[in-house]
Image (cartoon, rainbow, N blue to C red; front, side, top):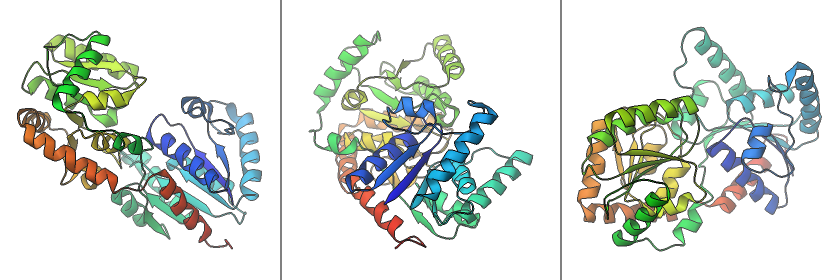
Length: 372
């Protein structure tokens, strides 16, 4: 089967999932052409990527050439699979007049869209939803949104983290081992901490959606005060500067260490994982924290509710006091940490891995209208 995989600008979960899915489909014998922009190709080291993404970065003339090349590729394919809103619109355009079915996977909600921009966004979402032969959502609210916009065939499609199997294969560190590794990582990153201090961890892009302002406020309110809160990840430089100024001005125990070569070591060192996002679908980092046996505190929004409910702690969006209280409960209660650790790993073992996910997608492609 010939599959065209379309992915726009991505620095996180969408790119990770699409690359993993493409590898899984190729292992099944499918021919996958991966079309994206240069930034995404470089970020994920995508060998053989076709850099045919139109837009302002390449100019109008080259954009038209990219559209023409992409249309020829789609016409000869069995299916075009677009990941995200922009990719869905692009697939809907280039597949017009062809017999190639369009599949659109939605990974993110459209946040804060009102007025004329919001109405235009709704029109585009409706066009893409009605054009697609199959629309999937990484969380149930995205599936419901696609239905509201007129999608013909909608399904929930869980997005697995490719790092979960490796994390599950390792034994869960005990508290002493976690704190020893935490002391080493903190020292290597120039962070002073009390000996044996527990580590509170967040792995996230520095982006408005992650609501790291709430994390900063929670870090200042939580006890014990000597527990360092560490944020691993890069992103919006201006936002990062503002967050660091707030931390420094108030003397808060929150530290931004940038991207790290081995985030799994941080997970094995952490005693609590926190993700205070305004919205998430099926956050890969939360899956990874659960597989590593780290209790999770996350906001009750999007796909996080189904992911964490019953095994971690869900808190309201933009509520630093609730975040701080949840973290304090885990740090103060070893039995609660152990229960959450065991429950999280058990849930993680129940998820499909990348191989099973690729097999499911191959079956879905094969059953699309017009496929034989």
